Image (tube, rainbow, N blue to C red):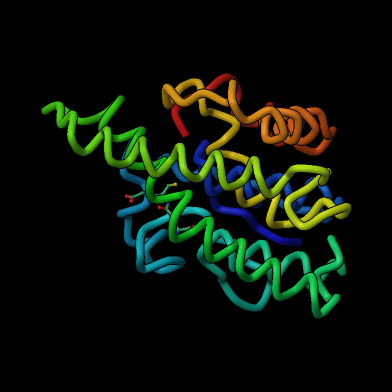
Length: 205
Ligand SMILES: N[C@@H](CCC(=O)N[C@@H](CS)C(=O)NCC(=O)O)C(=O)O
């Protein structure tokens, strides 16, 4: 059985969403990163980077949420991942999520919620890029159900968690109606409802 080491974080939520979509049996092992459990030798033996999520498939440990999504989807044959055209699109979105959406939304959260010394310039810069991301994704969804067209895929799952908490980040989807509809569509999926419920009410991711 797959083991998922995680916590109530954006990147763990992605993996939970996919495991519940694919109905793969798994054991969830919480690593309390707020209590520093990620720095304990027993966890560093699993992931020397000291980060969650990590999965163990019985053979090896795998880190990096988007890489985990790709590998789980391939094993389950889920979300048209084996279609060559889809595969190329998925790779682009997974890289985009990891290099642009994730870091800038994360920095908005940091400067808005966690930083002890305010830095309005940094907040404004990351908010600007987060808003560009919102517009870009909204445009992508004009006339489409999902990021890669008709098929719900790991691109949607990777991009979902930060958008799920856009209110908490002080970001608005008022001018992004296609993205707002997409968000509702994904929020209402039974697997998403179950994945979010495992964390309880945010619980800062
Ligand atoms: N690029 C990694 C990021 C993983 C990551 O940053 N995890 C955070 C929680 S979302 C963590 O474990 N932080 C604990 C720490 O840095 O001490 C992924 O996508 O899985």
